[in-house]
Length: 245
Image 1 (cartoon, rainbow, N blue to C red):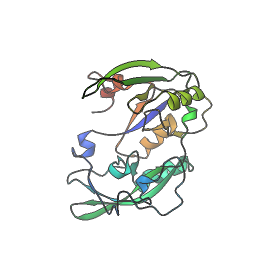
Image 2: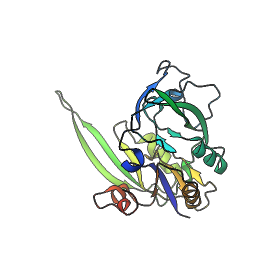
Image 3: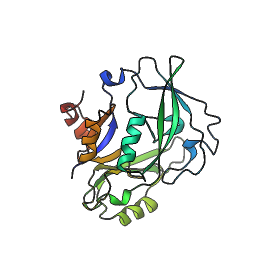
Image 4: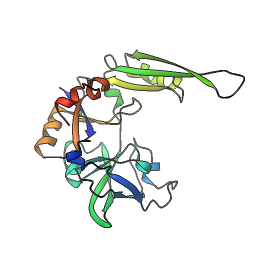
């Protein structure tokens, strides 16, 4: 089974050539503990959270799938059609909270902000998946400013437990660990997966879900095969150009 990352389209013919989000409205205090962006993903929300509305740029096109950000980082903004399709495939993965879309002073649509209920990082095939590990260490100096040394390597951990141990004991706040060549376990039962702590914020879907999205005409998405590293996909002569503008 082949798997793909779902990424937002940046084709100007699809996006309108504009950044989608201009601002967030009705924040009711960005530090409010009931704000959706302050509630941890990976567990179900049991309250009625505060969800900001989205003010979007004039000329930006409304698609079925957008990245949100700001106070809602690492979440997505989807239409009711996308929401219904996702829920028909896997109900236990996400919660959806409504947000008004304001454009040109008018309320033009209701979208849904996603919230991850559970992650499935353990279903990554750690025997094959390659990680790009960047280690940054401060060099002690008797004066300001400090200097840093940087090292890079490709790592394969061999198991989920080895990965967790490394992430807990070896990573500092300056380091980064990103899965660059990704493989999913053959016995994975889920058609949609979301990972945590591996440097991939995209959702991962199998080929059947890709076909469903395409057949239903869900707009604003691109499908990136997970086994292709980003430099091969996005580079100056990247494979992406064979499929998308």
